[in-house]
Length: 331
Image 1 (cartoon, helix red, strand yellow):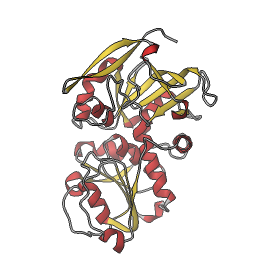
Image 2 (image 1 turned 90 degrees about the horizontal axis):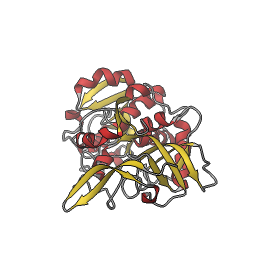
Image 3 (image 1 turned 135 degrees about the vertical axis):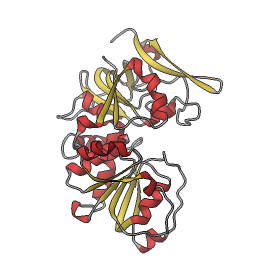
Image 4 (image 1 turned 180 degrees about the horizontal axis):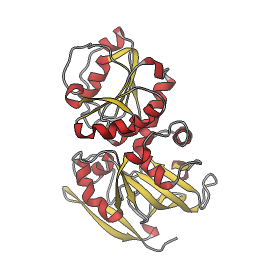
């Protein structure tokens, strides 16, 4: 194990949060029975919130952000995860209350760790990351409720984002007709390359409407929330469902009971942070097989070094970019 390693550290300074690359030692790592040489991570909106003074997701400082950790186990006292294993860890308190992936070493509890199934390496796992896991969990939950490709169109809100873009790729690969909603009309060709059949604008999905509108969607994947979630509920077909995982559009939901009691629709909450490890490992097994998204390499739209992460976090907080942004920690 390296004596010292580099890490991006966020620390509170009055009402502000300062960020800088520092050299740490293994003694600076938090408790855990698995130590990972981090090869790859990714940048998520939650990472930007964790280092923002108004983000309200960090549970304490100093903090190494990065909610995705992918790499090789260099030391383990956990019987389920051996030295040398290729693994991914994400969710739980990683990057918000426990040092995360923007560092060359990470130490975590073994029951947060997923050994990579055949077909996935550390780079691909980080590319999928929390966002892709959330997308897959959304599709799996909809299908467990009964959704099939013969039921009609599936709408993906926030389709140019991490969760949305991977959801488009998963649904298209599984044979669904996917309609993508986005405020970035210039990304139409990119979304269609991932499998979207058509696009609708964010102005439509965020507009106010009647308690019930025309029935359009068999299901909706919603990583946005707010007015877009209200739109999804009032435009679902009878018996349809929304898998909702995000709140970038706001935490308030202005709706009525009418979609629920007159059309029998369902609102399914998707939490990817505290999914039990057994379920988490099952989802990753499927991400390596039947849930592997179409156009996975096209979903990776940018690759950063550890030196590049800090300036990009401000861009991520402002909604810049699209797709998934990888961090080559070992490079």
